Picture 1 (cartoon, helix red, strand yellow):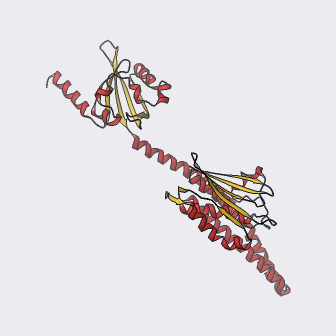
Picture 2 (cartoon, one colour):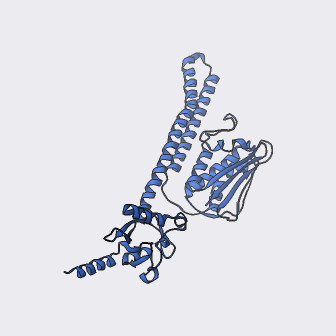
Picture 3 (cartoon, one colour):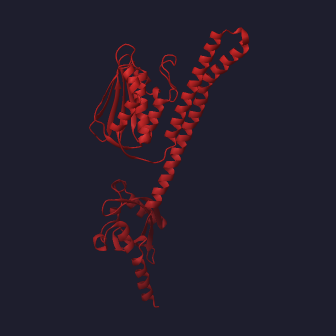
Length: 362
């Protein structure tokens, strides 16, 4: 095969390659030729692209920053330039491209132009981003679970200490301890055991929220609200509370978690009701405005706004356990559920007037 035939064979091979975009640029970055791989990856035909500057493949922000020109300058100086980043197809969609620009010289060493080879690595980039996201999520979960384990162990000590104390008192008292005293100690031990049981149940609920697989689906919040109100109906009737539910939207979410979200928020309103005025709970939604806003409002005892962030921390309580039962996990579960749904929960309170919990879903 003579030299001319070899050149033709070589150029034909490059033209037919479809896994890589291979093109020639002149010394100023103007596209001179185009192979099938370039058309497949970038979307332009050869007739549409030859004669245009190669910066057309770069996003506006990279063009404004002068990235294409910097890559050519690097290739002039070092012989070649390598880069990975987002590139733009003809239809405006983006792909993650790995490029190598190589300077081409004549016999005297002067720059004739450049060869540019691009590979579409969008699938690899997506897989790497997913791994990185999972690693970050795992790191966050590990920190939460460390905090969770420490706080849980600390909070369980109190009821366990009471159980041991009262049973020790019964054993030490023997026959000298009268029946009424024994019954009182046993009742207090049972109360402490029930508190431990409630704490364990809440911890298991929190663990289920943390360890969740992707199972998003359309969820009608009207149905969720109806289920939760049915769950609390006996309490609502016994305290003559009024619950007003507006027209709620359908969201893309995890049904179990959204049910837990409303169980905890409505349960919170029922628990922290005012001892004098009848409780009123209002659940409403505003029209979409880039996000879905849902509000849960009550006229209970409220709280100081300075404590608005504190109430979402695990085991944090603003009110004494003697008057208001609970473990202090409920609102931390709400915050975690909103995190998983890429949303946000905010609390607003006024002592003696009530509280509002605002939910923002994407």
